[in-house]
Image (spheres, rainbow, N blue to C red):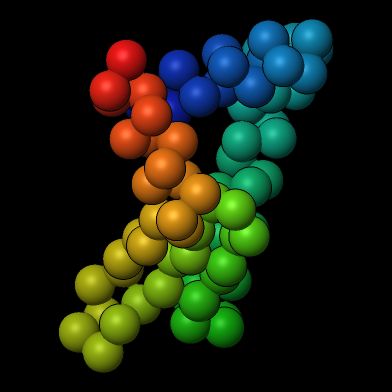
Length: 76
């Protein structure tokens, strides 16, 4: 899924406009980016964490719940 797909998915879940969904997605992504820059890490319980390791290459670590959800979907 790309950003446009994410916006569409959020729009469906919020039952709002594309503009509202795009604003929500942008706000979340900007908040994650800002948090990684200022705090070095953003952790979302049940999803995973975003962090900048020593090599300054942004990295995403999926939580066990996210890994299990993906594994369940790929086994279907």
